[in-house]
Image (tube, rainbow, N blue to C red):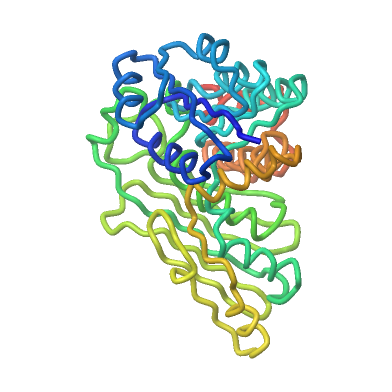
Amino acid sequence: MTISVLLVGAGAIAPAHVRAVRGEGERAVLKGVVDRDRTTARTFAADHGISAAYDDLATALEKEHPDLVLICTPPALHADQCVKALSSGAWVLCEKPLCASLAELDRIIRAEQESRCYCSVIAQRRFSGVVRHIKGLIEGDVLGAPIAALCATTWFRDAAYYRVPWRGTWAQETGGVTMNLGVHLIDLLLHLFGRWRDVRGVVTTRQRAIEVDNLSAGVVTFENGAVGSLLNSALSPRQETYLRLDFERATLETRHLYDFTAKDWTCYSSEAAVMAAWEALEDDSPADHAAQFRALLADMEAGTPPLMRSAGAARETLEFVTAFYKAGFGKEIVQRGAITPDDPFYRGMNGAAL
């Protein structure tokens, strides 16, 4: 079985998707690329040896009949493009954020249900070898109960970064540092520490002429009683991604910037059995697009729902991020499940401007 793939969006992240497809050999074939700028689409196709280039998604879907659509466009376009691709009978793998709001996500979920295809969002850290190893240790109760976490995405984005037309606005970027940068580590924390119960936070904008947040902090309480401290910054000259996870019998810690492998993680424990289990890592595949793409192909071949499907883990993370924004703007504690369709934050991370 060879899975035919259509790439939508020829921007900076698109080459990572091309590498992921090409890395699978005959399992997947890249049939075409779509970009609303015809010249960009043609240039990208020529540079990457892709046979067809389009400036219209509907036309590309009709002509290529892809099994899988990879969406790499600006965030405000994601929801409509996901629905179109699903309605054509294709599975979807979309760059984060999957969409602008819970309202848009529920629209995608309805399209997923009607088409009987699946829509998934990029969360590549979950698919790395070391994270799958950690998840196994947690599920096997090797580390003990989760206790506390420190989760900090401290990056730097200068004024030039926000001159890209779609960045810095609620309408086009759909959110700021919390939604688009910090979400990587937030998603990983949720994956490893379990279901969240409530969140409180601060969301603000400093030093840049933008609408969206570039600084946020919060505290999350999990249903298992664990507590996590969150910091997201796009203003930090010394950039770092830091995650510390304290369990009953061990502390796990990673310092990196964007991607990581096992060498970027450290386990601290006084128990020999815990350290032996930690060192028994067999797969050290990196936290990149290729690992998630490979897992998605396996799901397609087996007809099983992907880990990051819209109605599953993707909704879990988006609901948390939405609650974080509501907590930050409203100066309140937001409970899991509190954001319903009559809530203004159901329609946007800024409360749809209330």
